[in-house]
Length: 379
Image 1 (cartoon, rainbow, N blue to C red):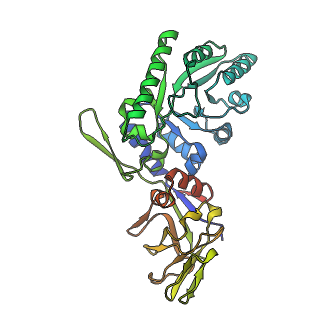
Image 2: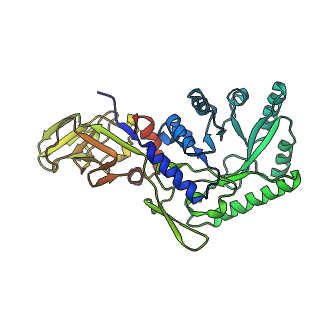
Image 3: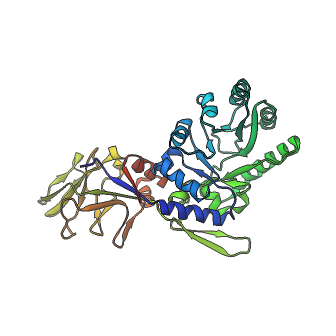
């Protein structure tokens, strides 16, 4: 038996979600975010699909992720969002670094001059995220220093929203206004229009003013809304006052097979710590996955899986390799039957958002945790 769950990744759903993004942003360039192994969906296959659909650029977190894409034959522009890393790799693998300090800019300039070449870079400014980016009262001075360095071709200016849920836009508006001011000031000083981008999935879905020259969607490409509420459909107010409603299609379905079925009498404790005790004669399925497979221990006694198109509650604590569910009320369950952790079976569905709600987290964490540790099959 293959260890743990199997994640089926629908590349057609990736394509449809991407085309929905393009329709919303009126064919602006789309920088598709595939960091963290495409949010657990597999960066190589997902990137190839997104590029085929028309993504102008792929964005990753670190150079190691970019190397994997290059080794897989992907030649499109790759933006590296965070890595300081080995400066030489940016040149060797034709990557676009995001600069957030003058020290890194100097190192890249030095390497470019040594190689007698020019490297394209984007520069990040911190408008209120408090994480990475040029910041403080010397932002403009630092920007001008970077623009004046030999061997660097400044192709873009970017920032990142702190508030994912833009139902209250006050802080997002403050960030956008600060970013626009920086962009306008540097454009005047260098006498050149600066290509800029700040819109993540949340902004794509609800903040048209933030589209600027390109957008950087992430979670919505994988079929989930970044918003805490209204997960299934997000409405974007258009300039004409009409609502363009878009349904996101979850890309990942996660399944496993029933390992064993046990008929247990009333009063039988299940799993570590005896946190669940059968209240009647019960039929318990043992499933071959656990927290070692990215299925959080927080799901103990609170989450469900789908068996025979019905919900089967998890009983007892999730173990490292095994999880138990109660199928007492479900007829004809047999060993090797399919069980669904994320996805549809019959008329029932369990989403990553549902699991996130039960664990007190966000679907990003669910997808990256389970997806990265499952055997992937592309359909």
